[in-house]
Amino acid sequence: MWIVPLTALPTLAWLRRGADSFTTSSRGLMSMTWNDVLRGLGGGASSLASHALALWAMTVAAVAPVAVLRETAMRFGVVLARRTLRERVPARTWVGVLLIALGAVALRLG
Image (cartoon, rainbow, N blue to C red; front, side, top):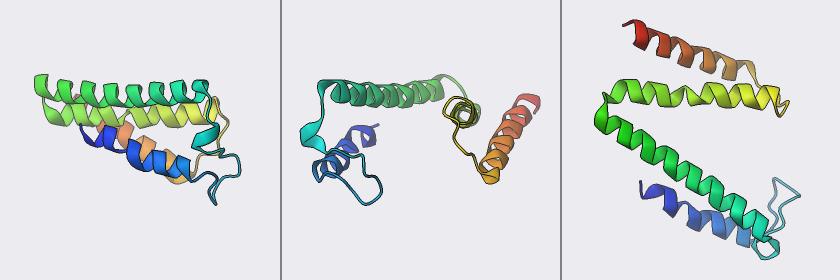
């Protein structure tokens, strides 16, 4: 659980140095607006809540089903990326999504 807040330090260091070699739209830490800060805090809070919920679920249920169901979230992320954001999703990602779905079905049947 402590690893989530600790990722803020390298993220801030990366933002502080400004534009990197991969993107040209990075403005750096100094030119961030309050809207940017609030969106970042919202994303961080969502990530922390997700991890906390998964840990809590593992205390009240068997770990294996919780872990498998947690990984099924990738399916929704890939589908949303494809349909909503119109991102190109490689075939190997679809294979991974299919394997995750089959694992959830096998867990339910077995």
